[in-house]
Image (cartoon, rainbow, N blue to C red):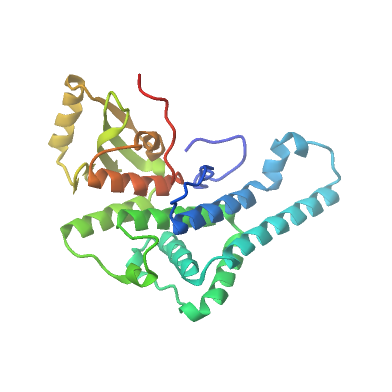
Length: 288
C-alpha cells in the first residue's frame, strides 16, 4: 500500500472518497460514508499529521500544543458521537452489524448485534464510545463489513429483519466465499486481470485471485475458472478489440466500473468499491 508523507501503519485505510450525494442515494450507504469521513478526520488529527502541515511547524510550546490537540480531538469525537446519536434506531442496528461483521470477518446473517430495537439508543452510544478513539479501525471495520454485505447481496435499505435471512444454493455460497476473502484481505493482496472495452474504458469481464487461492471470474455469473481458462483469455486479449489490464490492487479497478455489463460483474464492482472506500462512481475522461 502506498505510503503518504504522514506516518501510518500498513493497514490504515485510505480516506473515503468525498463525492456529491445523488438524490436517490441509499440512506444506509450515506450514513456509512458520513461516519467514515468523520472517523478519518479523527485519524488524521494527530501530532504526526499536524507536524507535517505548514500550520503545525511553528514553535508552539509543548504544553500548549498538547492542550490544543486534545481540544481538537474532543471536538471531532463529539461530532462523531452526534452523527451516531442522530441515526434512526434501525439504521443504528445496521451500522453496528456492519461494524461487527467487519471486525470479526463474519457473514452478515450470523452477526449478533446483542441489542433489540428498544435498546438501540444505548447500543449506539456504546458504539460511539468504542470507536471514536480509533478512527482508522472504525473506517476499516465499516469498509470490510460493507464489502461483505454488498458481496452477499444484502439490501442495505431493506428491513433489518431481512438481513438475518440466509440465502441458499451454490451461487449464494460462492458470493459468501468471495465476500469473506474480500473482508479478510487488503486491496493490495489481489491479482486482478480485466477485459476492458476499448471504446468505453469499462470492464466487461473480471478475473480476481487472492494469493494462491483459485481464481474468481465475474461477468453474467460468478464462476471459478481453471488456470488454463484464465491463461487462455490472457493470451487472447491481444487479438481482441478489447484490451486487458493487469494490476495487484483493487483500487486501480474502481474507475473502470462505470457501466460494466453483467449482473455478477456489477455486484462484484459494488463490493470492491465498498472495500476500498469508493462507494460512488468515479469520473473518467470520455473515450475518444
